Length: 171
Image 1 (spheres, rainbow, N blue to C red):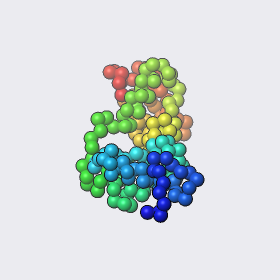
Image 2 (image 1 turned 180 degrees about the horizontal axis):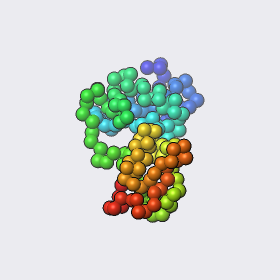
Image 3 (image 1 turned 120 degrees about the vertical axis):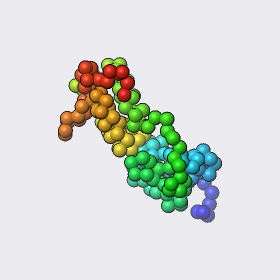
Image 4 (image 1 turned 45 degrees about the horizontal axis):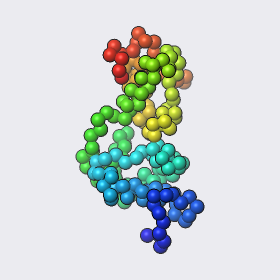
């Protein structure tokens, strides 16, 4: 395709093939080998950014490539999945935002984050869990709905006092 051969398992940051093309080829290879099957989620932009140590704009270009090739489709707010639009998506056992919320709630229960102290912000969650901003926001909203945290506009989100926590103590 480029008139020369390169090893797609290692990114060549000094060569002529743009990084986004190299990473997009790695994703395509995972699909072609069956590691990612129809309906499976593909790595999010945040995950690509973290795993390949690339900039967010590069990750966006990576995500666009398989979509333009017709290998994947995107559902706004849910992610990008292998296959054509309408392909049934593989069920996730627990939504990712709930898993993140469970981790934060566990930290609260263990006393690692005390009442009236802030929880990790969206950017921290995005980096730590390799998720998009919308997923981090969903985790915070879920924690808030359950009573683990409260948000003060323009200040942040803080741990609620233990009398506000869910009775069963799980998010």
